[in-house]
Length: 225
Picture 1 (cartoon, one colour):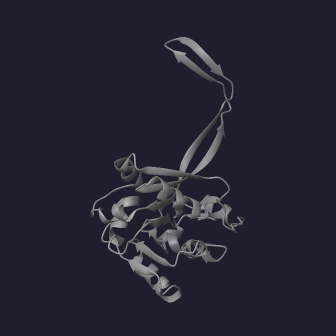
Picture 2 (cartoon, rainbow, N blue to C red):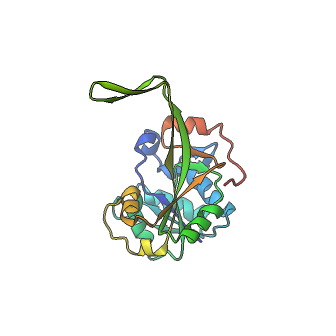
Picture 3 (spheres, rainbow, N blue to C red):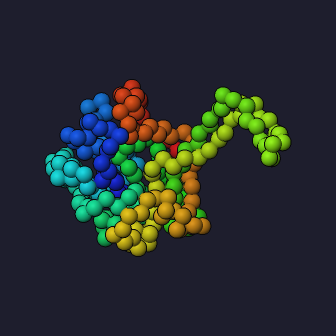
C-alpha cells in the first residue's frame, strides 16, 4: 500500500508560527509533524510515501530531500481542498492508498481499516473516532409549546473523522484539478464509503496553538486498532 500525506494547508490556526515555517515543519518535542507522520506510516509497513505541498512548498521540499530522499514530493499550483489536493499525486497513486493530514498525531494500526476497505469493496474508507459529550443542562423536547420529553443532562455519542482515509486508485485517478473537500468526495461516492471506528488508537489534533502545547506532553507509541 502507498500513502499520501497532505501538507498543503496554510496553517492559519498555528499563526504566528506558520508565518515562518509551513505547518508540516512545526515541531512537537523537537520533531517536525511531518517526520512523525512518516515514521507512523513506516511503522505500519508503508514504504512508498508521497507528500503534496503548497504553502512554503520549496522549504518543505528541501527538508524532505535532505532527510527523506526516497519520498516523492508533488508541488501544487493551487489550493484544492482536503480531497482535491490529491489531484497532484493521482498519476503516482496505485492500488489502495492511505491518506493522512500532517496535523494529527496517532498510533493507529492501519491493518484493520485496510481489511475493512477490501472486504466491503469500498471506494473510500474513513477512519473515525467515537466521542461522548455530556450536557450540563436538561434537554426539553417540545412540539409547539407542549413538552413531550425531558432528558436531564443527557450524554450524546457521535463519530468524527480523524483525517485518515483509505482511498481506492479509481477514486484518485478520477480527480480533476478543482476544489473538493473530503466530505464532498465521500458524499459523491455513497453508498460505497466505509467507516472504520478506531477503538484503542490515540488521535491528537495539533491544528491550533493550544493543541500544540498539549501535544508536548503526549506519549504516542505502539500501534493500536
